[in-house]
Image 1: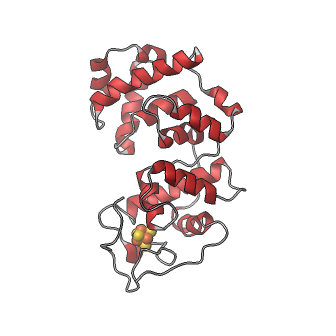
Image 2: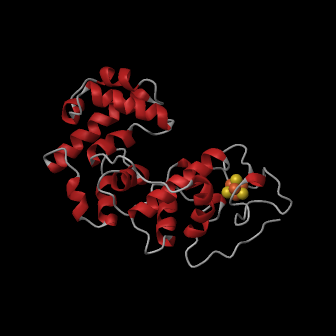
Length: 241
Ligand code: SF4
């Protein structure tokens, strides 16, 4: 048996509130330039944060933050640096192509011009680059010093918001992004969307995990339609995340 919760006009604050109570405010401490953020996000696919950050720091140190030099580097050299991440061979192949395409389109490795675009136009421009999807594009806009109003939907945010009924049960990341951005309060700016991302991600890492969500202890159990009336933990009818 499922329960329903009468979310307010915008359900996202109803999700944030209990999470803020246990995780506290989430603020970005160090924003990078958008090209560095693009590099970081491009190597983060299916990798733990600690692993991808370490790989990024090694790349940045090795090439002295000269991303143009890195874009001309031989694949095996890059692969060796990226090897602790998942799919290092594919990432070593795609990353230089991505940066060379950016240089080709702009004449320089610079994404600061995106600050003058609307979020939708900036997202579309980034997604036209090779191997850049809605998650990476939103990371560049929201996590970097561009600080734009775009929600990063990573695997945790996607899974949790599907279980909460806030993004389409069978939709992809783009569908989740569209749905969540539509539901975000107009008053929410980049910082609030950053905070929502961090809070929901932490819930996904601690309570609403992929395999064994801890519904009975979850701070969202009162509003989540996926918890059964008896407070059970694992529900067979969940869609695959
Ligand atoms: S109640 Fe269960 S399914 Fe719902 S958000 Fe919490 S852990 Fe996830």
